[in-house]
Image 1 (cartoon, rainbow, N blue to C red):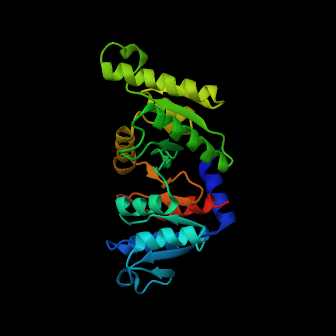
Image 2: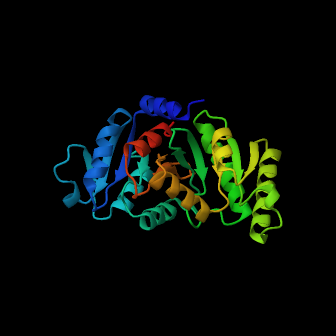
Image 3: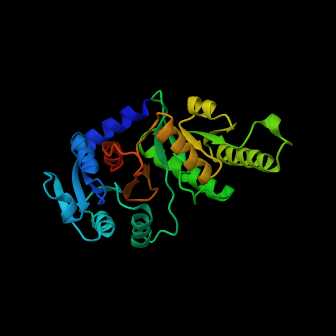
Length: 265
């Protein structure tokens, strides 16, 4: 099953109205991605007037772009939103407040350097700290993946191989947690495998990979996308509305817009 083709086709078919946040640093980069994404969506730029003068796309000027972007989503004036280059802490804080969310769960869509796509979580440094957190994230993530018509195959990662047991208490605990999470998902009817530390096997055999923690996941994301030649398509927040989080560190913003448009129906 070609994940990226499914998303491309859904986005093209939906051609949703997607808002994207534009920060003050290098707004042209976001606008370039928005123009490139015109085949997938009608894009609305949300940012300050001084940052968006002279661009031809539809613009919602605001002195508080994070709040305006979230309000446009809440009111239904846009079908989905992409954080774009707005600050993470402020924008996600507004999102949580406006929709009454105690915490945010996100699943990122990545691709390896040879183009193999997979969903991945946790990616935030404060996510997935406990077994319970990772189980909730895995279960919610599977539901999200099914919305795209894709059957999730989960690969659970941990900190070592089974023959490493006894070398480190931390590794022993990580292996035990990986076993527990995979077994719990299997009991819930999910196709899940504990892949231990073998990321390479997980990428080959699964389409949704669960890292041992948010810190580990964030490091893996950065190693893959910012150093290792992989790619990132954004991280949808697992909620009823469509909101795709993005990294300001690497930016072809057309890809998160495509993903947002694909998720609107």
